[in-house]
Structures are given as structure tokens and as C-alpha cells.
Amino acid sequence: MPIVTLEEAKAHLRVDGADEDADIALKLAAAEDAAVQHLSRPVPWTDADGAEVPVPPSVKVAILLILGDLYAVREGAIIGATHTMNPTVDRLLGAYRWIPLA
Image (cartoon, rainbow, N blue to C red; front, side):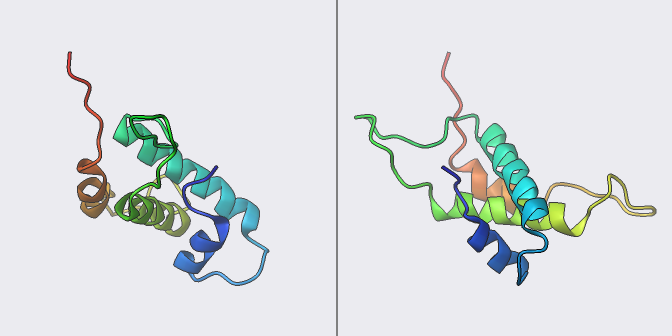
């Protein structure tokens, strides 16, 4: 089950209609994958009893920010510009990052 719905993604991107649904869905899947990889924890989240719990809103917002970057910058490079990860994404995800203790 996706963390962010296609409808939420389109609302964030301010896209009406269905012409770009496939492209947005692909970028949304990539954004969710990037966030999950950054978190180093399985999704869906579960509590101690194994019951699924909602993903925190800050994680959803981070996914939407990543999606916005993927949607706005459709090429691998921009001539004359330096592209870095949005620091807000790191701050939103950092509190939920799973770091296993050895």
C-alpha cells in the first residue's frame, strides 16, 4: 500500500487531469523508495504487536518534497547549477531513521 496516494501527489504538484498519471505514479514510487531507503526501516510500519500503524505526517511531506523535485527536474543535470538534496527532507526523515544497534 502506498504511503502517499496518487491524488495527494497530484494535489501537491497542482496537476489536474489524468494525462500525467503514469509519470507521476512512477516518480511517486521512486520518491517513496528513496524515503524508505533513507529511513532504513520497513514500510508499512508496525507496532510491537505487529499491527500496522500510520506513517507520520512528516514522512509523507518528505515524500512529497522528493516527488516535487523529481517532477520539476526531469533531467539528470542542469547546466550551471548545483543540485543537492533538499535539507528539509533530511530534517523531516531524520527523526524516524532506524539505526540498528550492534
